[in-house]
Length: 285
Image (cartoon, rainbow, N blue to C red):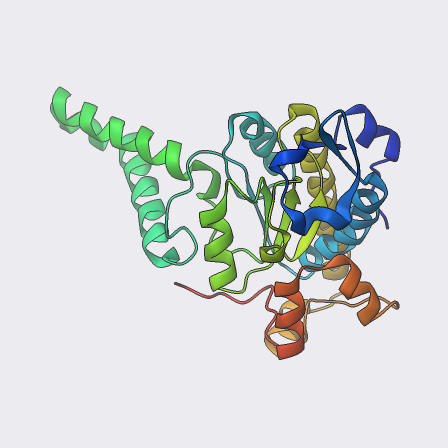
């Protein structure tokens, strides 16, 4: 089913407002409707069309057991990223992106386990045997790790997809995902480089209301996918084994390659043609 987001909502939240025209990236030309008073106006018809397509892609991947990692560390995005990712029980990064979060996942996972062990020791009363100074040191370490890793503490493997607010700012996350061939859904403003993004949402990546709406759209798609997965489980459809046996979670629609050319970035098309697009494969860096 398509996204519930409407053109009216996109307009009311200012998703159509891009950057000043002198700061644009020419690669975003096809997504720009016009320049008005020195500001680029984004073509919301393309935004809405892509949101419908992306909604179905996300729901399909999640229905097959995949996960979406929400990423947005700029001040305007932090609250919405945490709120919407939590609403759909998905991992998120809304503080500084730690280099190696994806490409050095094994080490990051070890730090998460260290955090959980410290919390377990504290909650079981083991800290009571320590001196006041030792307790303080360990509590500060817990707080530091919670701040850095809290949003991904329950992520037990690499994500199937990334949803990123401001692909220009989150260039390290984009680079790591590209290196591991993890697909990216990216909110791309008029100053962005769409070539590094697999599914593009042309839109304002600075306005709080716009960011909140786009986060909500992806979270709704995740929830739909989880509902489908529960239905599959009730019907004893074993999608995990199907994926392990080589069934791709990527489900092209009836429009075929022509639609793919329209909605996807060049990196995903290359992966599809090479047969290397992977959504649900654990790949430790």
